[in-house]
Each structure stands twice: as structure tokens, then as C-alpha cells.
Amino acid sequence: MIYLDYNATTPIDKAVADAMLPFIHGNYGNPSSSHAYGMAAKKAVEAARGQVASLLGANPSEIVFTSGGSESNNMVIKGVAHTFRSKGNHIITSQIEHPAVLNPCRFLEKNGYTVTYLPVDSYGVVSPAEVERAITPKTILVTIMHANNETGTIQPIPAISAVCRQHGVIFHTDAAQSVGKIPTRVNELGVDFLSIAGHKLYAPKGIGALYIRDGISIEPLIHGAGHENNRRAGTENVIFDVALGRACQISGSLLADQAIDKLTQRFYRELLALFGNKIRLNGHPENRLPNTLFISFLDQTAAAVHKTLEGIAVSAGSACHTGATTISPVLKAMGVNPDETSTSVRFSLGRFTTENEIDVVLDHLSDLAGENN
Image (cartoon, rainbow, N blue to C red; front, side):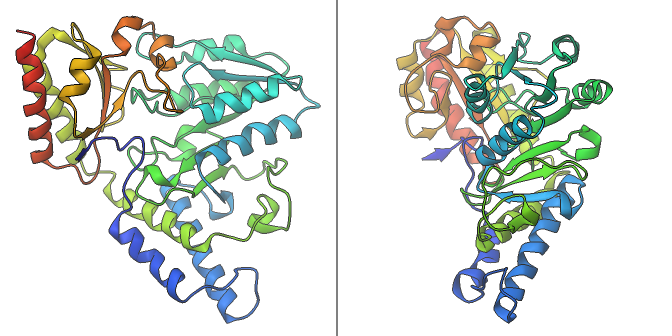
């Protein structure tokens, strides 16, 4: 099977797996212990924290390890809601956020909070002007993703953060899809919080991080002992912390590498050559992740598209996160014709995608193009 679903999850990089091994086989101390085993584990966790911070241009003290992007998002949204309840009860987000943002917001709506779900344009972009119009004296948080997991569209985060600063509103971005693919320097983005999911950048599933700007304190999502500087209780997952740190270090060293971008662009050119105006690229044509193509195959049936792509791991535009077949909320928010969602396919390339694999996929798709001629 050819794997073109890197936005769903990535394989663990061998160098990341190698970094984990010493903490699986021997260095098993509890970082909170004062003996040599514990001190070695603590040193490893703090080194990993520094590696994550370096990728973000943050201070190590601003990084909290979590179990993944979903926990990071919940920690921010619920933590800000609780901590700043005396200031207000209004939260702003967008209609195209990941369920790890939308569902915590819906939970808060059941508990006395008001949430504004901003629309997007036909490219899937949130307007900073719309954010500003939505802010009220009771707004305590704006949360807008950095890059969309389906379309790859990159949001104007610096402009949105400037609006939030002007109005004194805390700003969070879910950067699960962007970290490791494009620059995510927190001071350039201007964010107060930023979420990371390790399995999107060649670390294992079940590890993530949350950037919390120094000077901001929120109620923890998980209460217990004083781990993570009293911000997230639970004995540190040393093995996975080390993995995320190494993954961030590797990703940082490869940010300037254009190989994936070039291969993605070549793939798109070949698709245009095969299908011409019988396909449509969903999302912004330029401000997009360098690995993502969300293509609608026009004048095709869903059955024909799916049959052609048998043996190729991709994501369909009509498949939701539970596996049930529904219209993609992202495409719906962008105003895409519902009839076209069933023939929309997300191709997301990655570090281990080869030219030969793309050739094989194009060969499969040439049959589909031929059937339509």
C-alpha cells in the first residue's frame, strides 16, 4: 500500500525511535525522584523540552508536555474559560476547526458560555476583520487553527493575533498540522498558546505539547501533584517526551528542505495534465501547507474514484473522524457543492514519500482520467 495520508498521522522516524530506546530498556527512573535514576530521567525530559521550545522560538519554561493535540486544546479552552470567567464568558473560534476545538467549545456552551463560530471564505480563510467584529467586552479567548488539516490552508495568524492584542484578548492556535511543516515561531505568530500533536511530525501517538506564553497562568485540566511546573499533573512520560523532542529537532533541521513541496507541486501539475478543468483544488492556491492537496474530481462518481485509489492510503472528503460517511464540515463551510464532496480526496505527502510512489498513483489515476474522455 502507498501511504499518502501524512496529515492523518506519520510513521515514527527511525531517529526518533532510536532516541526512545535507552528509556525503554534502561533509564526508567521517575523524573521526580532525587536519586541517579530520577535525575537522569529529569535531565532527558528537560532536554526534550528545550528541543520543542527551540523549534517554536520559545523558552523551555513555556512548554508543557501533554498526551497530544486534543489534550492541549482542551487544556487551553477549558482552562481559560475557568480562569477568566470573572472577565467574561465569550469565546471566538471558526467553523472549520478540528473537533478537539469545536467540541470543548460546545461543552462550554452547555455551561453558560457563548461561542461565536466564524465563517470562512471559499478558500477556507478566516478574516481578521471578522474576528475583530466578533470581539465584545466579554470575549476572553480567540482560538483559530494555524493550518487546516483537510485543505492545508494557512490562516493569517499574525494578523488575527494583532487584533487580539489590540483588544486585550488571549489568542490560541491549534498548530497540530503546521508544526514541522512550516515555520511556527510563536513570537512571529503572536500567539499566547499553541498546540502540538507529536504524531503529526514523526513522533508516536499519545504525546503532544502546549506552548503557554510566560506570564499567563490557567487552571490545569488535570489536577494532582506538581508536575510540569504545577500545570499538568501526572508522572512524566519520559519515553515519549524524548521522542517529541527529537522529532522537533529533526523537523527544525529540515524546514528549509523543499523536497516535499517540490514533489507535491509536481504531483499537482501531473494531475492538471491528466484532468485539466475536471478537477478542483480545495483551499487557498498559495497560502497552504507544502504537502497537502485536497482535490475534487468533478464529473466522477464516488465509486469510480474509490475503486481507482484502492491500495493507496488517502483521506476522503466525505469521511468524518468517527468513520461515518458525512459531508466534510470544512468543505461545507467553504460552500463546496455537496455533490462534489463524495469525490473529494486529500492527498498528504510526507518525509518518506518517493517519486516512484507518486508515479504509481498517477498511473492509477490515468485510468480514471481515461474513462472520462
